[in-house]
Length: 365
Ligand code: SF4
Image 1 (cartoon, rainbow, N blue to C red):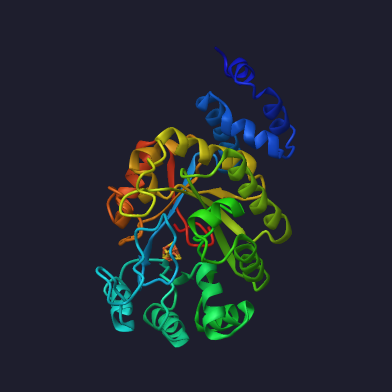
Image 2: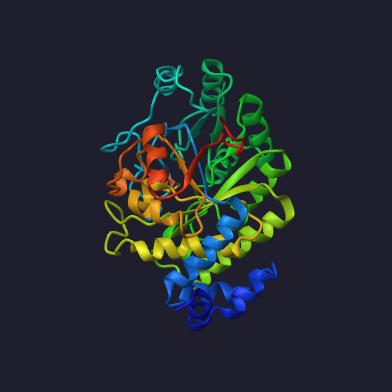
């Protein structure tokens, strides 16, 4: 069957016409894509959109990831990483020296980004975070610091009696250059009340990203999928991202994150199947017409699904990472790091062209 007939047969003819006319998809279109029973038809449309924007280029970066502490006062049910108190089994907090050592030993490598996210530690002073940024910059001034989720920024504001803007300004003065997208989970209140009731809500998450964009920073945004959310709630999440992006143009990439059930309070739920992972990335590519990049975080999707996703709307595979704890404590079986050559091989083996980028999507070499 020709693709046009298959798209029609899948009930996606109208959506295809809208995409041809560069018209924005509606809430109902989003739900129709998520409930379509022909994954390949959705994927075909998403791939067409991906190639229109990026041809066969697939971006990645050479980065390291540091999770300085897993002590966290929040109790997100899906989280396998956090430990409530400093003395709890497997709880850790790195000294500043230990954090800086992680970059110092790799400083000779052509790393372009350090990505730092942490638990919400009740006792660390604000100077821990500013000194961490300053120390990283001192070791490698050219490094881009993408650190602290909006949830952490909200926590700093509450803990240290500062406004969110003040927190962002002081962190920027210490070297912060962009925010990662973690902590978005699913914006719908019904879901947040059940799975992450005691951390910053959706409006505050979005307000902090709006503030960051207003201060000149670029940020990413995520969506944790594959647990108790409905298809309508996924579309609602993407609509809120799209609306803020219309205002600020500050999001660089949308990053769906697969729920992993091991070692957390939602372990009775199964993980999302590969087909759902491909569908979420494909719908994101079609729905988020104002976000340039859809990223598959290979640590969470698995390597083979990440490769396949490059034909389902994805144009970015994150980075070399070097060390990852959050997903590995939740049962991820992927490696904790990949070399640049391995990432390039993975992308080429999927039939795409690897392009190394920096955090702001400037092409390197
Ligand atoms: S997801 Fe983040 S905020 Fe929630 S418990 Fe884990 S570390 Fe804490």
